[in-house]
Image 1 (spheres, rainbow, N blue to C red):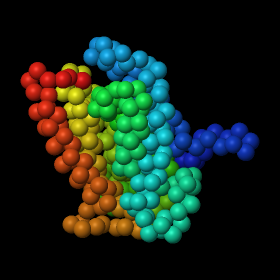
Image 2 (image 1 turned 180 degrees about the horizontal axis):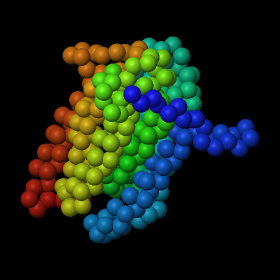
Image 3 (image 1 turned 30 degrees about the vertical axis):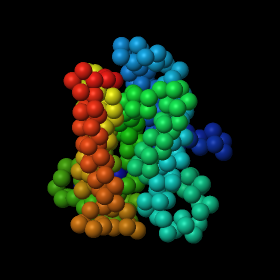
Image 4 (image 1 turned 90 degrees about the vertical axis):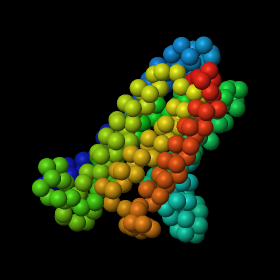
Length: 271
């Protein structure tokens, strides 16, 4: 069996200031978004609508706020509502850890709605620009989770070549390195599929809907290898909280994709 390398979570130190690997993975995520979104708005269908690089930079600013606020509130509401109801000020203590992707997604959606309104652009048009540029950031952050040795996987067959012991778990049996599974599925695979899908003009909103559906499916699958949160365990039907939160994404993404396509019609609006 492999053993988690036990990386030092601090990448660089300058006197009393420490830069953590996890923080750097967020910077990588934001940098990748800038690069990919700039390429996306340069495509003819968006350039014709007046999209420019400075729009991408402004979207990133709004998006960062959405990720932080939504991710933290989502964690408090979805995973520990009772605790944070009694300790509301701790919601502000982001440095203590605890972020929810699903909450962060809702935060980004809200932030993009504000951005679209401020620029007098259609909300779905904005979301179609954003959607294919997100998965690489997800992959980067999941690598950060692996470096930290957190969000480890469920028990694995010790004969599995990449089965790994995570000392942080307090147990010595082999586990799936589920952080890497998620980086590969929700990150790299979803990016490739969405980027290819978005290369051709689609009905406005369909690229964003494809992201919602795709992430929901791939995260649902990955959750079968990820250890459920100890304070929640498995919920109804033997599914984790992450899986239950993915079900509305799968159903909603499918319905929205079909709706946008039907609303556009054969000669309809393309993104």
